[in-house]
Image: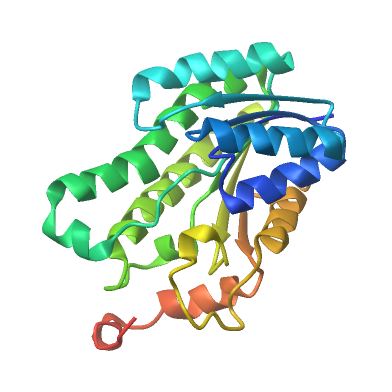
Length: 246
């Protein structure tokens, strides 16, 4: 049985992942902003077979509240061995171009809050010499594009942070998993029309996350085909890349 803390538990991907954990009889502590939505998800997971489910609300931008939430998760579940960090927003690129406050807010939510929570958890897991820290980043972080470089920059920061953290914790037996989804059909992307073959459903991504956690992977692209796609994109020369409309 895994004892799993999920931060950003009301996101479509996180909820689908929690369903898989619940069906296996794992214990779950769910954290998000919306208390009503959390309660509905809890009820569903209890029916699906979770051995224990508890919930708590959190604004991840309130850095002073992080410790209390993690401590509560430890108490409720009798310890933690797996953490999935899945919170985030899809930045408004135009707004970030015109407002430093908007840009800073995106970094606080999508990058700095994740780094702060990871720093705290890493120290705890390092002492125990065990555990899995899984974080949803994005393929967007592999290369900035004019259409969403503010969002991409936050995810690039998270990806780089995870890379260094993984190297640091490897000798302690703590696993750090970087999850890089491509296009996912969720409420956050509902305003995007004409979703094509590259778009995945949350259930597909969730299954990939659980497999990667079970196999103690370091980095996973979901679906798999985003790995070769991003390999190509990363190696397009700047002289060509800056002329593309991406």
